[in-house]
Image (cartoon, rainbow, N blue to C red; front, side):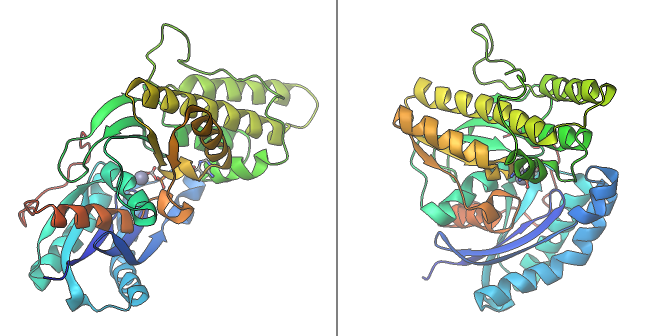
Length: 340
Ligand code: KG4
Ligand code: ZN
């Protein structure tokens, strides 16, 4: 039989995504974001996000089908993010996915959001080698994972952030610097005109006695806020570009240092960097430089697949279908704080 076409639906945060994948290949995807509606609150408002998913879900599914040149009836399975994420937001995607799976009489698969971020890379670069180390860096997560077969083996958690996620640090410091939301891309842009050496920000948890795979970004956030305050109390204007470049350098340094160390310690020669912060130009450049020096192959999905999308969920669904995994029952629930 021809491989099934899998529709993936993502709605865990502020992006509504739908993607279509068959046999490891992306056929088309579409994403709508409610980011602008959250901007004036400085962060994602769960109730607004959930309502936006209600508006966007059907048009986004239609958009993905149009781009792929397919019809609803071509869908052979539906995969949907069940967690982790905002509960109201997840509910909308799951309810929509259930309705489609039921009406089309096709199997439904629940997908872990982070497995989706990992699988995003396979759509561009093919199957992942077993094993590989994955650095997931987004607004909600900063984790180092040891990944074997995504469809069959549980993911091993090597380390996590003890407080803020790296993306959260970008977003919060950007606010202090007077940069627009979301902060990550704004800091990235501002940093182009700055000097990373202008400010010496700390490199948290990189000391000899520290957990090699744990991260902490709240101290860095505080250090950046103090630096901005000191300038506000002086008379000169805040050198935002320098602050942005130095912040970006500190985050990129810590992330890539620990990720490369994890590869070395586990004898792994492929590092995959995924999540919204993988879009950061300095994180990418430094990861490339350090992987090259260590003889590690670096894989980073294309920018459009780094941030939340439905294609990455379809990619996991496609792996599950091809591995013969058991579909989810139609009464499956969301799991907002899903562990790995
Ligand atoms: O993966 P994602 O779209 O959503 C989740 O959090 O799951 O990641 C969003 C995060 C935000 O914190 C955003 O500021 C950050 O990724 N981000 C960036 C860049 N683009 C997005 N951070 C730094 N530099 C960027 N270029
Ligand atoms: Zn995400």
